[in-house]
Image (cartoon, rainbow, N blue to C red):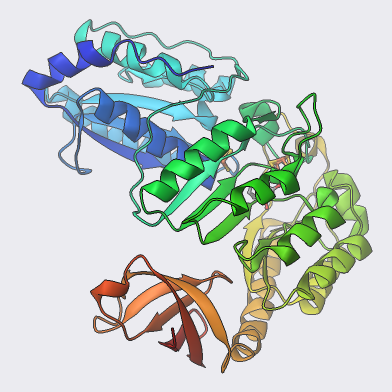
Length: 455
Ligand code: SAH
Ligand code: SF4
Ligand code: F3S
């Protein structure tokens, strides 16, 4: 479905006089960040100018509900804006994204936050220009329940902030229903974008000088399962590999259960796919994984991770949840065991957060919050103990790095990320910015590496 912005010109002429500024507050994952770039693109096509947090007129909150804490953050920020509205400042508020797909949130907005102007769910950006125009120009507010429309919108204007790396969504929604996770309920079922649309976008990015792309989806390796013809994620990667100008291809997240040999072969063969794979573990215990509905065992995960580690120069990152309902000490030790065996380069760690409506929310849980925090600390400690040795293995080797700009902490040095997604700093000059160079690693400093450009 083509995105139609029929209110663009009307809003633009209003903005010709009013020059409204927008500010976008994004919570959550990279899919949401990608959506925010689209909202920025839509707003600029309607004549809005980018503003700052303290001087804007339209505040757009692109929300996440994967864990509990985001709700308080959102309502706290709304409270602050209410004051500006009460002072008769020209302030409008729009709330979009995953959180608005939950009924209790809509109820709360309707009863206690009636000053909000526009509320929209996921996958319905086409409705945004009209709702916004009505709220601002016609003073018509309407807060309504939005069903997950399962739509796939193409040709939405997008405004990238970065000049050399860009994210591209390839599949929306999720069919996996991991028992702890709210995403399938708020993002709907899997919808893959047509390969020709993705190729068109990536070619355009290459023409515009982009060097690195990040392919996004809740489960990228189910890409194409919803097509009638056989076309899958490895085939898409091979197609994108051919696009001149793009030098680094990343993707996230793949689901371990769908990580088949054909994908491993494509990665091995590729000259562009980053030597970094995000492989979400969640738990290292087979019984917990079963209750999470992850569809792999501890042994299967370890086998896959070690197979991937045989690809030269590869680094692995992962997501882990501690304190899943009734997770025992022994079960948690299995998670630590997998972390020791696999040696991840990066771990995103979360304490289990109960999400109403999910299957896990109905499970009994006798693990105390203190115990969960303690497990998180122990996991963090183990990770930080393993990291220096992993980094040290990189010393003396040469890695591909996209030069991003001057280092913030070391003004005279430049920074970039290696293909392994490690932050690297080195001597350079402005002419290197936006180029992919070979950097030889000289030393490791836990969260970054220092090196020298060799080519
Ligand atoms: N689709 C991706 C991740 C989506 S959410 C995947 O399957 O890997 C990002 C991460 O948030 C998840 O990997 C998980 O580790 C974490 N997460 C999801 N639901 C959670 C919950 N209820 N409590 C704590 N962490 C959660
Ligand atoms: Fe959530 Fe699981 Fe889907 Fe990831 S794969 S979005 S964790 S349900
Ligand atoms: Fe959050 Fe929605 Fe992403 S719930 S993690 S923003 S898909």
